[in-house]
Image (cartoon, rainbow, N blue to C red):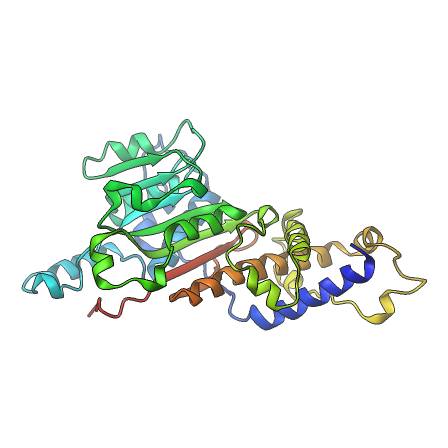
Length: 349
């Protein structure tokens, strides 16, 4: 990439970010349902790292806030209300969806979810084999049906999973790296905007998404959900890959001390930057950037990549939003993608 192309790309990123990323809010939510985890009132044999517990709890708290997960108290009210209602009109039919955790690793996010919210049908998708995982604890609960799917997300057909058929499900993931986020979403909602009531009753369908994204530098053009979003802004495939590379600058240092400074930093160049006294190459221009400027540009690249995913989901008929679910001091990888299906014929009172 030539210097003038680099500076022009930075301009495009700044312009795209200021136009599209307008509602990215802080949303660190610690739900009542997870208090025993937050207070360490759990089995001492369960691995406990505070920063991971805080992240897991906030993911679940945001799912509850976004209304794709109901608190235990709401479920009790719903069950009481259900008595005396005809089954076909029940607001609480299929109230407890199945959960599919993508990139599940050891399964600790789902373990907290099952323990705190009464989820009883679980599918853990992970291509690797892990020791010291949550499976043993989950399998000890006789009310839980647990299945591990050891497969690449790209090769997974959820409609071929017989034990999931006929069930609504939630798709979750914590730090789902790079293109894995795009692959997981595609896996869950092919033709989702064409759903009708008959389809919903006869097959599995996606009810909601909560995915904490990360490692945007590993995103790939061939898998990215919304390539047209970048094309419409005059960006090429090569520029997309440059943006993914820039995104790594967001997490190459400790930005927790003053994240607001990073968010407000701008790298938008002006015409005076390309002259005899300025940098003569992209490499020199990058070396001359202040650390805060590089980090700010990296965060903006992560923002625009994730907002492209949000826009795609909205185009498929979902209600979707992007939030920062924990402060940067806990993790600079703090984007949470939330989406839920619009179902006008399912009415909650």
